[in-house]
Amino acid sequence: MGSMTIGKLSGATGVKVTTIRYYESIDLLDEPERSASGQRLYGAAAVERLGFIRHARDLGFPVSAIRELISLQVDPGRDCDLVDQIARRQLGEVRRRLTQLEALEAELKRMITACEGGKVASCSVLAALGHHEHCLHEEHAGKEVLAALPSK
Amino acid sequence: MGSMTIGKLSGATGVKVTTIRYYESIDLLDEPERSASGQRLYGAAAVERLGFIRHARDLGFPVSAIRELISLQVDPGRDCDLVDQIARRQLGEVRRRLTQLEALEAELKRMITACEGGKVASCSVLAALGHHEHCLHEEHAGKEVLAALPSK
DNA sequence: TCTACAGTCTACAGTAACTATAGAGGCAAG
DNA sequence: CTTGCCTCTATAGTTACTGTAGACTGTAGA
Image (cartoon, rainbow over the protein chains, first blue to last red):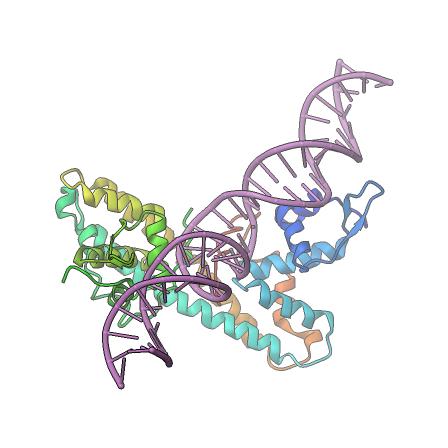
C-alpha cells in the first residue's frame, strides 16, 4: 500500500498529474521516493497532504497561506492563534468578494432586463457600460478587485 | 481639448499608465497620435473607450468579451442579441461564483468559531482542511472554480 | 515474445491580465 | 540650467497552473 504512481495519486485526489509535479516544484509536496526507473512513488501520507492542499485551494487560500498552514501542522504544540488568524483573513477576503459580486449581479440583471432585442445602436447594455460614473467605485477604488475572474 | 498625455488619461479614468499601454498592445485601445517627441496624445474618445473597458472589467467581463462588445459598438445597426447573450453569460458566471463563495463563507465561519485558541495539535481549522471528503465537491467537480482568487 | 498503447519522465513555453523594472529621453517650474 | 517628475521602449516577473515535445517505461493482448 505504500506505493502508488503519480497517476493513481491524481485519481485519488482529483489533482492533475501536472499540478502534482508543480506542487512538488514549489515545495508544497515533499519529493517522493522513486522507483528503479525513476517514477515517483507515493504513500498514504501524500494522499493526505495533497487532499489538504486541494481543499485549502478550493477554499481560496493562496499557496503562500497553505505553506504557512503546513508548517504549523508539521510542528504542532503551539498556539492555534496563527491558524485562526489565517482563516479569518481568508474569511474577510471571501466576504469582500461576496459584496462585490452581489453588486455585479444586480447591475448585470438590470442591464439585461433593460435590453430586449432592439438594435445595437440603442442597446442598454452597451449604454450602461459606457456610463461608468455612477456605479461600484467612488474614486478609483477596487480596481483589481475583480480583475481575476477567469470565466473561461 | 483634443490632447492629453497618458498620465492625464490615467488620472481621468483611474486606469494605470502601464495598463493603458498594455491595452494598446493587445489592441483594446487604438494607437493614439503622438507628439513630435513621440509621446502619446489622447482625446475625449479615448477617455470614453477606456472608461467603457474599465467598467466592463470591473463587472468581470474577460478581455475577449470586451473585444466582442467593442466590435459590436463600432458597428451599430444590428441586433442586440449578441450583446445580451454576452451579458447573460457573464451573469451566469457571477452567479456560479456567488454560490461558491457563499459555501466557502459558511465553511470558514464554521471552522473559525470552532477554533478557540487551543494548541495546533487539536486545531479544528487544520482538521477541517484535512478532512476534505464531505464538502463542496462531490466527485471532483469545480476544481479550478475558485483557483483564481488573488487575495494579495 | 512482439507489439501496441497508456503512463511517466524532464524541460520549457504558454495562459490571463496585468505589474514592475531598467535605462534613456522629454518637459515645465524655479 | 538644473531639479524632478513624466514619458518612452523593452523585458521580466507575478499567480497558479496548463500544455507541449520528445523520450522512456510498464503492461496487456495476439
